[in-house]
Image (cartoon, rainbow, N blue to C red):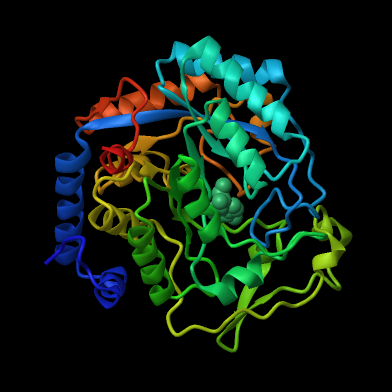
Length: 383
Ligand code: 5AD
């Protein structure tokens, strides 16, 4: 039976499934579950990418601290302008996202939250990385509603290999942090990258089982997209292992933007079956997430739209997703938030992205949601 009682090994088997008919069945169940549990509305969240400064050095991310990238930080007024767009467009929510930029301090963010609430009455989702407990508390009091913190992978060895601990800080357990965020009163969202080198099908099945265990309100997943100016974007398979391609001996042109501190070979955990970072696997993850967590809000993510702008965004919405996060970041900053390359809508105005998304929603017979669109899971838990 295809329902939320799926065992890990069944989940893993679905992730490996190649039979078209079987996959059609999986996607049909996910789509029916979506309709029955969260309806035909597609919730729109205006995404504002506040800053690409980051103190962390994650091996896959284009915003990693040691990359010599051009950095920006939006001003208070720019952020409020973008939030106003969300209100004008009738998006019920803004998502404030950034790297772990400590210039976005407790007071600055708290003031933003209050101001956005007062002026525009929008629901507010934060996606600002691992922050201090006191900040989480203060921001909730200031009026924030939701917090997104992907745990990226439940495989601890793989997690450690790709997330070096920031200098002068200690390892923080994101799972514990998510539980704490829930305790504080946030709707909590998490998710993983799909097809990270070293991630097996079983790892991905464990990730999905953990979504269910954590009883997440929101689940966002997208394919890993190699970024050439990061260590994980320059790896190759050798003797059944992933290794970073040494930057030694290459031209200086080639070294552009890559810190020499990463100029060594990393060895990644060997796995029997590497999970692919393709669109089909992303669709399977979305469908299984819907079946396992039927009342959660699940976005069709930018990473999926980056692989295939039309087929990807619509495809995920037809296989379990019920949220889209159109980008409202001012155009001049968009290309700088290149956590991965060729990001969908990286070069267009907010209005254009909005039009495209609304058209795609209509084309698949769905309707844009009006209101804040809290997760039905969250509302049920509170009832
Ligand atoms: N490919 C795909 N997703 C990425 N992210 C960061 N870098 C990449 C990449 N190279 C995702 C992470 C992070 C989210 C904001 O973006 O999952 O949590």
